[in-house]
Amino acid sequence: MTPHPPASARTVHQTDFTASRGNALQACFASIFHLDLESVPNFIADPNGYMHAIDAWLAPQHVQFRKVNLTAEGTLPADEVFLDAGTLVVVRGKSPRGDHAHVVVGAVDATGRAFVPIMDPHPDSTFLDGVGQWVGLLQ
Image 1 (cartoon, helix red, strand yellow):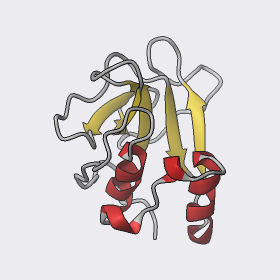
Image 2 (cartoon, helix red, strand yellow):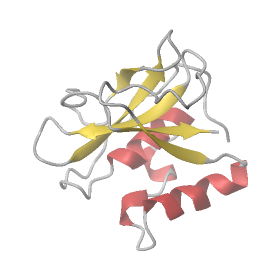
Image 3 (cartoon, helix red, strand yellow):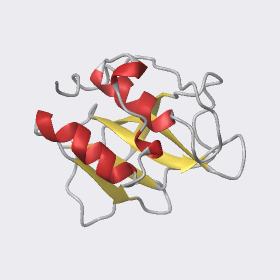
């Protein structure tokens, strides 16, 4: 199982809308890998932490998830390499529905340093309130 080609995210909606405990991250991974929601674990619910759960799920595919903090403008910092345009990523930022975080699927834009939101797992599709705070890269 590998991430699908650039900018080919599948729409997968989250089913748990609990603030800071929902399954938007699960839906983002299902979208990127073109899987049903039930085929991906709810990483947030893992008692060992979501990063541990993501690493364990991706390990058999020889894929790694790396978080990179973004600048105040929502772009990669200067010390990060440029990414290929169209590459799918997970973008975390502020939810437009309250004072908590939310994640969406984004695609790297033509600059190789910024991101365009392409799939919001929340059914209202309002994406993020402002720019992203970190981006999750699948490598």
